[in-house]
Image (cartoon, rainbow, N blue to C red):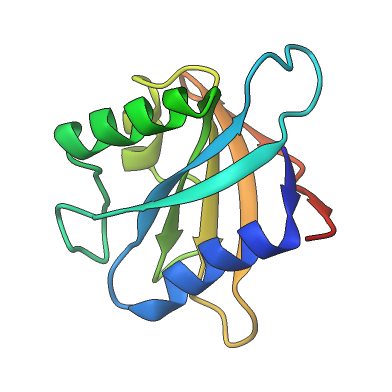
Length: 140
C-alpha cells in the first residue's frame, strides 16, 4: 500500500494514545486500482469494543457506518489497522481468524512492545497463509 507519511503517523499516534489497549480503525483507499499498489486516501479511527490488550473488534454498526462514509467518497476499505501492545507486529491467531471475513484486505499492525519507536508492518492474510506487504511511504 502506498500511504502518506501523515496518514501513517495518524495510525501510530492512535496506537500510542493508550498503549495498554489495542487501537483499531480502517484505511480508505482510492477505488479502481486493480493490480497496482493501493493508495491510502484517509484513516478512520474506530472503537475497540473489547477495550482489551489482547484483541480488538470494530462493532458491526460502526463498521457499517464507516464503510458507507468511505463509499460516499468514492473510496473503498483497503486495510484494517490495529496495535499489538505486548507483542511484535505480526498477526496473531485471533487476527488470522478475524481476517477470514475480510479476504483481500491488508492488515496494518503497530507493534508497541519494543523499547524504541513503534514498528509498523502490513500483511495480507489468506486462510492460514500470512504474507507481508510493503508499506510505501509517500510525502505528506
